[in-house]
Amino acid sequence: MYRSLVYPILARIEPERAHGLALKSLRAAQATPGGLVLLRCFAGPRDPRLEVKAFGQTFANPVGAAAGMDKNADAVGALLALGFGHVEVGTVTPRPQPGNNRPRVWRLPEAAALLNALGFPSKGAAAVAKRLDGKRFKGIVGINLGKNKDTPPEKAAEDYVAVFEKLRDGAKYAVVNVSSPNTPGLRALQSRSALAGIVKALAAVNTPKLPILVKLSPDLDEAQLDEALAGSMDGGASGFIVSNTTLDRSSLAEKFPERPGGLSGAPLKARALKLVGDVRRRLGAAVPIIGVGGIATAGDVIDRMKAGATLVQVYTGFVYGGPGLIGQIARGLLEFVEREKLASIADIVGSATP
Ligand SMILES: Cc1cc2nc3c(=O)[nH]c(=O)nc-3n(C[C@H](O)[C@H](O)[C@H](O)COP(=O)(O)O)c2cc1C
Image (cartoon, rainbow, N blue to C red):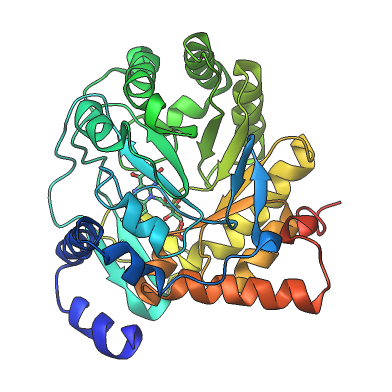
């Protein structure tokens, strides 16, 4: 119904406005008595075999909402009710900032992809903290930390620490985002020394300990990947999110040179999948990976977990698939678990990466 009735209407509206409307509706639903119960009709089965233990937490299922979907924690309760096992809020910057000029999000429906050059529009850490603090959500909330555009790179660690300290009480894990392509100079923070500096600065204020993950770019070459992993591990990172959007448009038939920004969705899938295996091979099973990029079906989730992802996230697939997508994926995962007679979906993690 979403694909034939709702999406065609949303597709006529400018993408960022459509996203804003969707968030507003979810926010209204979660504020209405009975609203969350209604949204839960979209969610899939809850089953202990879909639960995943990671970072000292139990996730109801492996599929989370990727950063960017709910930057300011408008609709966390509603997204969890739709069946996501976790929601990663953000990216949040210390001070509010508007992001880049519009238009800055474009749909590529034929490619099941999006282009975005948002540049961290954020209400700022204090405003987001008010929406998370003291709330008891039915699911896991993560926070994705960013820096303000006008903060120079040598002071970046201070920004990550500032957001972390404001938001940590409302979250179960935190993510250092050094891989968005839309903030000038941000990706350079994936160097060994810069990343080690940021993660160490967070570790210094991280009591009681919250897992700190690093979100990587899919555009790193082998040497840069080694550096980013080494810097993160030097600093004491607990895991990785693989990956952010790509600047590589070689897989697109039409390149849209007039539209800046990162590509997400189906064209990113093969690259993000390979990178999960690359990270797993380098770091082994002890360092958890959250796989993200082009996931839209239960089969995609299974492939990503077999490659080495303990958990996965979805953004673009949800835009095209609609509110029933996560329930559909959960049903597919449960069928798989039953067919394969698995005690837990977590049993497949890393099985395709020696
Ligand atoms: C419109 C849009 C905004 C995004 N904003 C953020 C963000 O603020 N922080 C971040 O770490 N990733 C952000 N991302 C990247 C996603 O979290 C994800 O890594 C990427 O889109 C790949 O997943 P997908 O193919 O399922 O969309 C954004 C993606 C899109 C499409």
